[in-house]
Length: 260
Image (cartoon, rainbow, N blue to C red):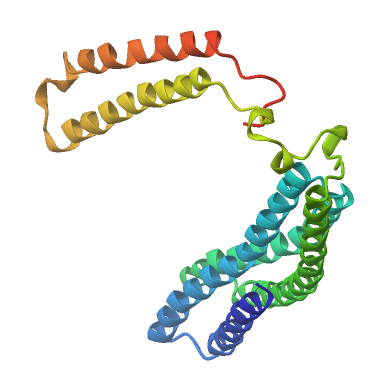
């Protein structure tokens, strides 16, 4: 992931630099201004996407660490480390996204004459500077996070070997890790609880279909009887599903120790 993000970051910085230079060549020409505005919008989208990769990466690896803690009983310090990585990477990335969006929004205001050009240029430099800082921080933390994930894989391998030797492995709260339990030891959500979720989803989806048909009737004149008695069949279908969902949930509550 480090090299993938490095390629995205370099490509984004190349486009940012190009559009900074092209911005100084507009010189009030309408054609160049329009080209710069459209291209600037694309560069802003690319920059926001690049920063979004940081959020998705640390969110995904953080979830993986939590699952490894639950399923294999790895040390809780790894979870604290993932949170620390997020606290270091997220703020500067959010600031860079804010400057980037402000640059794009006020760029249109510059063309209409509502905002001075100098404001747009200062924001563009701020967006570029904070983007560079965010990329440096993210790349550095991705390297450290990758090393931590390798350590976790080694610890999981040791836990598997210990379990294979018949040793007692203690997980979260002194219990056996989830993936080391026998099938009969794994606590699952009751079938009735899952069925109640399905009934509730179908009941809501029924009214979603009604809303779609009503919109078609309002805009295109289709299904002309929908505004009078058309809702009755949908109510007749959704009401039993809703009652069934409530009844199943009451009869089959989710145990407090089931992670669902």
